[in-house]
Amino acid sequence: MSEAVKIYTIPTCSDCNFAKRYLKERNVPYTEYNCEENPAYAEEVRELTGKSIVPTIVINGRVFIGFADNLDEIRKLIP
Image (cartoon, rainbow, N blue to C red; front, side, top):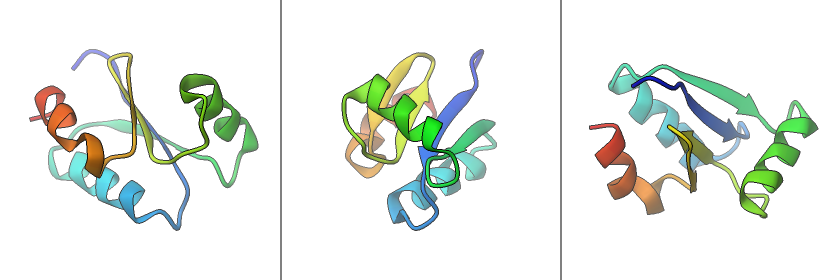
């Protein structure tokens, strides 16, 4: 995978934690952006999606809002 995975999260989000665990189990490097610690990250999510929903996951330029609802598509990019 040429481009790093980005994941926008907040600490209390169970779907965020599932997404991070999924990536770790597959040894996929990712950069986490904690929207609770840095409001600028929350603004990036709004710019990317028009919404304020985490996790927002960016894989090779593709933006996914939520993890569980997008797992089938994410699996195609991260087996």
